[in-house]
Length: 528
Image (cartoon, rainbow, N blue to C red; front, side, top):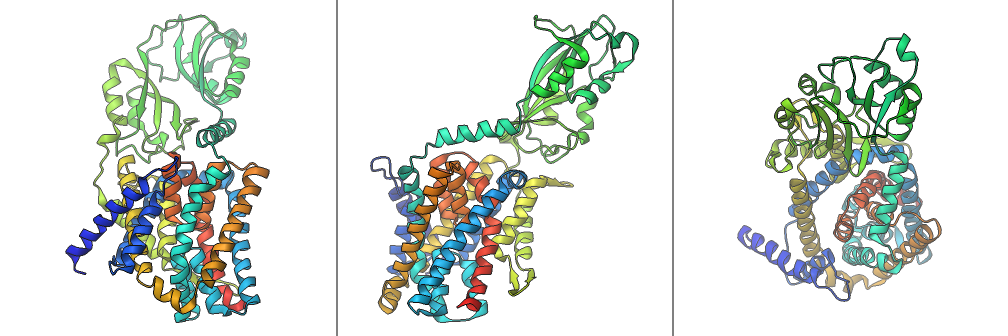
């Protein structure tokens, strides 16, 4: 098939598969599974998309996911990441040892067991790890038999699990946000009158009050002359101050300052409040303490809104693309402040491919580094694992010197969707060409073993964690997709849900899950 035919068939399969996937029957549709089914059929009839597109698609999909979820991934390691990875470890291990026990009982041999295991997890890196230990044609053939069925069933499971267990996406997301708010209290603004007698006898500056209470003094009404709010002025008895902080911080300020001022007050300064989105390439990734220009304009960040939560503007906080900043600054410098922050996501450079290509190159190189482990020997993170690890780190950093790693939301979405589609058409057509040949040689027993274990364990785990342990449904779906290291499954979940929570859970468990499946693939030959 020449290159013109390849391009034609890629977009033809996109069109037919997405049309089929979007057809709804009683609120159910195949989504990305429609494209996979069409690709399998096309592969059987000789339409094969070169495997290079699979790896290209995986590269840009995983890189975009890593950049988007980098900050959330590292935050989750501090909070729920350990719990999520423990669940993933148990889930993968139960499936793995169930396959080994069944294959041992029916005396199917280690090659068949390896093919069933790697095919059940639809993991090409795990297959490569198995073949590095034992270069057996049987492993590849069994993998080829099981892979398409496991992939289709996995994707369909992700479509029906929300129906079976009645997962309300909006309700689960609201519960998640409430939990986030509990751990990240909202930042509010209140007025206070200074009535503590200590201010009559002691010289207390604005910076002293901010340091003691953790609040930020936005504005002040005083009988004494104050030229700019940004100056470190002295606070006097009787002054009225407007401060920003969480509830606990404002309580401390009330204790120190004196009393909350409930009446309306018109401050006679030139200060205004601006709500601006970070979109200036020169600002993305910088620490708040590095924004010297903002301070020179008399501006002060009082609150950061990111991914639905409030963040205190501590000096060490890195600004991320799309952060909503609450800034107090003089009206005379309004245009300068807006220009500095950006406030226009559409203006963020969307075609700067240098950071994208450099990041993917670094990821591939990291994936090639051999790592030695006891009883296992050398193994590698692989192409996909290396890219994800690097993307997570770069997404967290935001920038290194002049290089901005983050992408605008529309660029990130385009990369994810295109990568996912290319991956599915390549995997589907290449598996489809061997489908019936492998079925006639090995019958359907590997498929039955794989799908039986896959379905029973997935449903059992879903029941335990969703119904008994009350794990958040959106987090659980992302966790399952990450445990399977399944990009199509994550695509299905993201399309159903429409928020970032499953992707955060996916990214939280994916690196660990990938490493575990690689280890199990190599250890298998030492067990059987």
